[in-house]
Image (cartoon, rainbow, N blue to C red; front, top):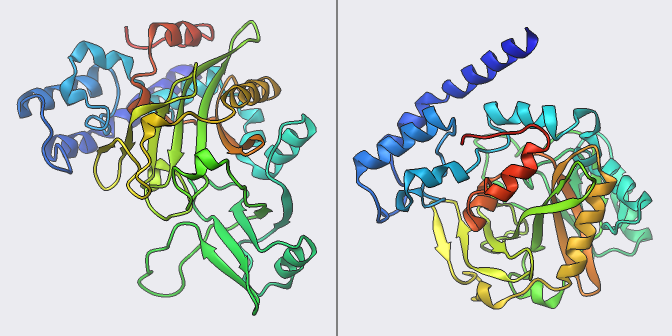
Length: 368
């Protein structure tokens, strides 16, 4: 009975998004009109996605569905946080009792260190919010560790929000937000409450540096633990800032580029979602051509992600963010709600026959 009530709730939550669907149909594209289908056909596609496949088509143009046959839409998964998908994933792939192991950055650090997975050095932690630049505790950490720069992250932060850099100068310490804050209408800009961890700033491999030296360019690898305790890779992508902003999150205007799982070579095009869907062959800041690059230490990147998946075995599918130092990869964080927007923009739909068979091992089936 409880499961029936939950299903009713999740279906109601999905259909409650109907006004968003209508806005998407009324405003079909935020950039210049792309080639493809007629307005009528596009409207019918939106209705098909929403009512038949139960997917809110907010990424219709990002996935270039206006150029695809409707039968191909079944390859595309909704966001893992979507009402009808999230509860199914938590019920089958993500044991919520263990989710804090990846959601809590301090616990994640400790768990990785215990199991021999390289992570950035942790220099300290602050409770009760972001410290001020003149906080003597921060000054003590940076003095004792001889740090010119450190990175402060909300312990339970998501999508790069609230991250700051602490930079030591002759007068003291400057705190610089990784993402420039928009000027508030009154008062001081707010920062996430809660604890903050203080981490080292990673020096990345020269091949990664030439993509964009203004941010830490990371690799998102989604792994899947089978019933036989084997690790399979669902997809991978490079994440980079599109400008001089220091974070690489796609949701904050970053660029994503698909990575070939077998070779580690970047795919031809990168994608930027904000302010409108853009397809790029090269990085707009450095001019680096994506297709010319191969992720260094790719074999080690895959080995580290596979090891981490077995360590965090209660969570059956995890999106790992890894950076690559000159000496090899380092684990930045894990994500259970690993998202699908960037991955599917760069690699195509996740619901391939092979991936469907993997999901089916845990009773997860999708629109046929």
